[in-house]
Image (cartoon, rainbow, N blue to C red; front, side):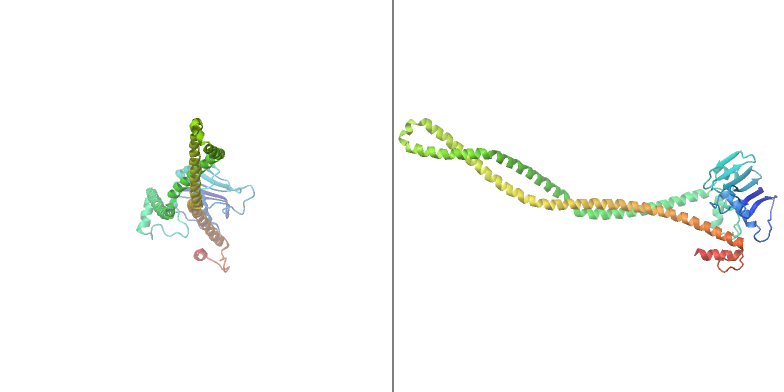
Length: 371
């Protein structure tokens, strides 16, 4: 049971201390006396919400801090303080036995265990009567929270959401994969084109070797042609010496050797003509090389498509980050509505028409501005 509550420099309270008795306790006071701020201070203590300095009192000086402390029948004193710099801390016990400094968000587990409170234990001003108008499903959820079964529902809900999201991602990926596979069909002939490229390159290599061999045969062919001319002169001279042929067998044998050499020269010349024909054929295949280069351009375009797929994955990751930012914006909107409600309660007038306002009108204004 809550036995004692103290609020220091918290909104309208400069230093207020309340003692509670067993049973029902009622807090009475005139309008804007700070009744609602007592409940807000207690919620601020157990939730560490809202963040920032909106709960800081106008009475607070430069170096002072806002503080809310409470004492329960089954626990030590618990105090929550927030300085103007934004630094927060929880302390347990009158002698400050345990201190939790640098608390940015949330409440330390040790404090939660000592408080043993949740939303079920807090009824705010505009809350509906506890479980009176609730549906069977809402009652079941409350009971589950009391006996700690809500974690299973939360886990199940998160798991279902994750499974659905994963299925959607799989569907998108399968669709994207099918589109890319369809696009790759246009490049099905790349393997054959690559084989033709290798053939042309081999022919170019063979042509280069033949040209090198032809250049090496050039001097020999020229020498053989000169010898052929000399051979013709010798043949004419031998013809004029026919009567002496019988005595010139040695000359005949030399002549036969020269004839054999002539055949070799003729064979070399024939091979040279064959090389020239093959050179023309290679030049025709070189003309095909331009088409092969165009195919290589298509291969580069296929690589560009793959990079576009990676950029699509990056865009999906960016979308998930935007979704987290939306959650933060929603929390900021809730805090802004809370501040607006408090401001209207403090000034007691409508910010739209400046007329006096009660709780029902305040709720109507909040709902209207939230549209």
